Length: 623
Image 1: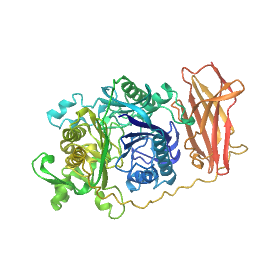
Image 2: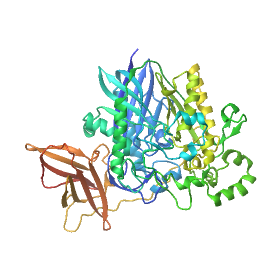
Image 3: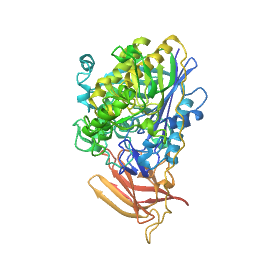
Image 4: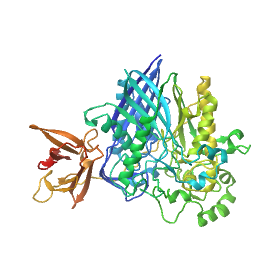
């Protein structure tokens, strides 16, 4: 029996100006424009009446708050069990769309407009995918990619048993998994899973961008298949994460460096390598059922059975605690706060080991040897800082099993999770993937051995040393239920905290003295780059979701044809405040090498509270 499959894509960009960005946690990283728009890419599958929906979003993180808002708006037949909403983990997207305070700290609180753009975009992409359902062949294949990731936490990785390390001889997970959707012999969609952090761009970048995974999708869709994002859906390619917790794209083990010393080039090259690896995979047609299981678990209170702990004794997870090394950040991808470092932090270690743990034996069993800094479980009693209950999911599409984990899983931790599930359902290990960053966010998951190294990832394993064994136990339960055709208990979802809204207002826009909105201030040419400055207005007046703030146009007879917009890699849109209520907008266009000779112009599309306006440069020639 054939599958039905559908694809959809939509804009989820959010606030392009004066919104703290999410991922690096730096107060200074505040959005001031767009490098590329962020997209939600949805894939609907149906077989014999059973459905599944996968939505891959160019977002820093996925939160339960978003999932809750999306689900009631989906077409009939989709619910929390068979819908997986996941993030590519770009660190260059606007924040403020969670309900827990820690993740909104850089954005000043909850941002209704960014949250609304994300939810509306996901619903739009998912609805398009459902409406696009049609008979299709699904093909699955695997390959390898060895020059797009490096282990940023090698000291922790090396603590794992030799058998685990031998599975990853280069300390990376090179597996590339591709699911292709074909209709009448034509490729119409693809999903490519590969583990590497979406952190080619550094915490000094303030332009919204999909980073390397965003470029991989853009390259395939726009440059290869000719998709015009403003003209409606077409071919859709997504590049979701797997177990990327300790995988960095910064191949020279320094932020923004490798394979070159330019972050923008690196994002493009790492993305292009993922695209090329995806297209090189040989795929074979698959068959088999669609199935799903999901349960909510209180991660701070899981009794882990001896068969999963590794030491023959039961253990219990603990309420969320951030270790000192969590505040150091992952140095390879971007250091965080001064005064903390990965590994040992002598003052915090001494306080925890000599004072805190002797007085709290249960905390010690769960969290030792972590240096306790932020007891988030205690803080949650006064103000919800982080979630404690999470949805864990197992989604099956034929022979492919996706283990939905709401967080960042290291490669060896992922290997153990995959083995736990594969052994029960009888699947080939390569067909069982950890789908990280799915349906929520619980920070990191390391192996107990990696946890003891107290690197950034271990310090960010909030629920303690037994967190991974708990996840293996949960995954085994979902796998057993799926194998036996049995239901699982839904569990108790996380209570949804009230939204503490950001205090952010946009002052009334005024044009520059003796100027009008949209007036051109200057146009410059530098080799193959054109830069135009305009009298602008605040981008927050209209997010232009599904639209654009700019257009590069080529003269075609008496008409102008748009050849690029703010979703293209070759353009940037940057906003800056001028005075108390004035704005200057700078648009750059890096002229592609294959741009045909002709007459061009750059248009700016802005908005004031009174309505839209436009501005355009004088025509210029590209030889």
